[in-house]
Length: 342
Figure 1 (cartoon, rainbow, N blue to C red):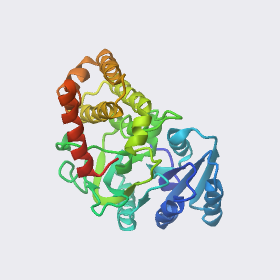
Figure 2 (tube, helix red, strand yellow; figure 1 turned 180 degrees about the horizontal axis):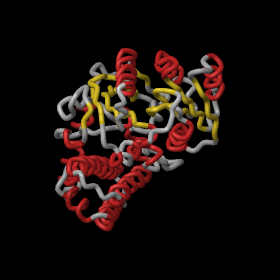
Figure 3 (tube, rainbow, N blue to C red; figure 1 turned 30 degrees about the vertical axis):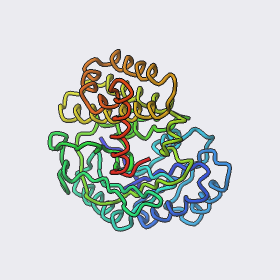
Figure 4 (cartoon, helix red, strand yellow; figure 1 turned 120 degrees about the vertical axis):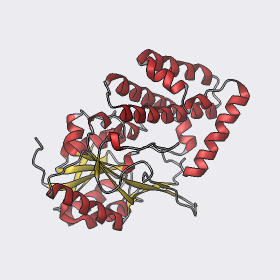
């Protein structure tokens, strides 16, 4: 039975030394009014982030809540938001990102209507836009070719997700109780855990709703940003750990729905491909050995998954020899240009 919730939507805003850009994020969320709870999580910041958060809480006491905690990383901040959330639904908006006001209104209206009609769904999906610094073309990640629009649906109604199409944290709003029921607790002091947030709860999701709205604006441009390629390469061990954790999640679940299973395998295919390409790009002497260790880990955890990935996109990233590596990196660069990531 669904617990009683005070708000329609809780939005967690993880912040770490975010004084330079967090205002834009928070200001974009305030138009949600009293239906929305904005939880600013000051994750051990050493600048004015905490003071700015307190300023908003004082000015908007019925809307903004602040959590000050020791630094634990993005995962710890999301965990704190889930624990304290009083909203029926839960979303994460990173402090350097923002939301579109028109789409925001449409989503809140839809959530309210669904709730009023007694149709509380497990997951709401919307589009996100790569707001890449200096890029005139803003790539929109939408799902209208794969998902039914403006109606409640299940995994059985889901169409084929094309290459490079998968749900990210930016596209998702979960039912808060579902996150608690599935034991969603992100690893602390780790990067790239947003992939776990968009993966682990999926076997618990039974009903979904998709709005073809360009809601979330995903900013890419800071040199120190975790998705900057040079930064990702320097943190390749973190990427590998997340890759393995996602394999663990998949291997531990007895997923009977064929479409859900296929989607989750495809997601792992993409993540493992990214890991492999970054290892190649790192030009490390241990690159080949590290990739082999990852594949041995997958095979040990789930042989069916292992053989599925061997036939997937990942096979391109693991073609033998110098020519194979060149082809893999070329394909990666094409996808990066098409989708605007990194």
